[in-house]
Length: 210
Image (cartoon, rainbow, N blue to C red; front, top):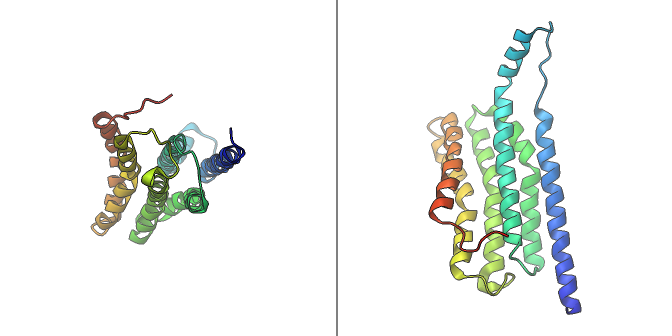
């Protein structure tokens, strides 16, 4: 192994390491807004009612957790095929992590003001931004095979590009829907799950996972 190859690989390890740390920190912060009901009397019925009253906090916690975990999975997946980096790729990854660390803020915003259109729009942009930047990372790294393995099939490169933009497109499409009613946009986000499942069925990876 060339000395330059060693340092390049070591640099990638640091990029991946800090990325995993940011994801872990962001996912942990999500749980802070989950509040145990403050009961005047310690009764089962009151506890159940208190938990029911907090359902939206749990709902958006699980939604954001799944979205963030999905972005981590995609980040991990594409970096399996990235073999090098430069200043541009590092900056793109840094901005990607910026929006990942803001996920708890986005969750709190939508928890408190999900009935207000502006809050829904900001949340949609906040959820979409990491996916867009992840798409940019892959697009830049795969352009003319700049920083990816040279033996990757072109179909796999194009398919990965397509899959990276599924989530952000759904969030961005929810913005005009919010003009009808903010909650309609929140329901539209549920399309994330069938969209990814259908995509995996119709367009399975050409390269099998290890």
